[in-house]
Length: 352
Image 1 (cartoon, rainbow, N blue to C red):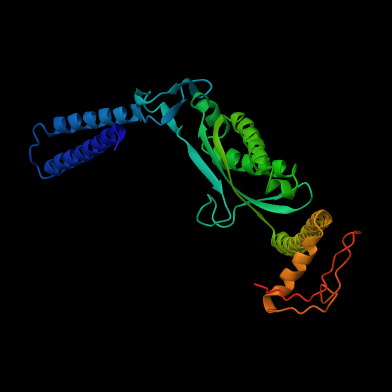
Image 2: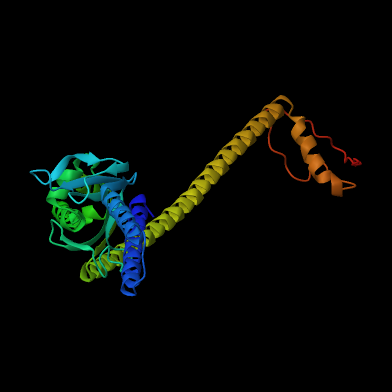
């Protein structure tokens, strides 16, 4: 309870006391009783009540979050030029009164949710985009009264500035800004730009009406039911196309993997064939070199061939009978052009 209410309450009690004292005096006089100083008491209480009433009409307490506009019958223009600042202030009783305005921040919300908006029901802003689509915007405007312009605000709007300025300014600015963008831009890449554009226009609009924009919040943007269904079908089609691309890519990778495996097997076979060919070449070269060395050895020592022949047949032979005049059972290859002396008597060599 403020001091003005307290003084007003005391004044009311004083007036009730005055009425009571006056009634007692009248009642006593009617019954022929002497009232003595009763009339004086009535006058004193009445004067006290009048003083308290005058004080209640002249004292004003301005809260820290408020500013006061003095409406004065003594001024030609009807108001004082000075704004009443916070604290206990005095005005001329019965000739002036004070209208107080809050300067603290306030939030005005327009939403499709019934319990969120300032207006019950669906209070979202319906707007049309550059490409002709309808969107529904939920938004909040955080604003305050400009303390230095309280008098002008009172003259222009009084206490109707929320419904007369904030609401229509917000709805008009949002519709104008949305009309400059396509629907795809609003819901994706240009949403922040849209919010910035609305904030700038709102700031100018409120400032011209003695209000200050603190912040603008773009709460939600939703489509019409028809467009939402179309977007859903588009998303489904894109997902199906993406799935198809994934399947194709998977098959391509499988084919590439199979090709790589086949190429690897082919390369392995080529390498194996090259290795086998090189091995055969090396083996052939080795055999050729061995034969060359054998031939050279036989050429240098003709009896070596006879020795090798005997070595091959020796393991299973104990005795060899040679006919007269023939050194071997089988004829040996001619290894030299010189004559060979053949013994005339049989020889029975013992093979170790």
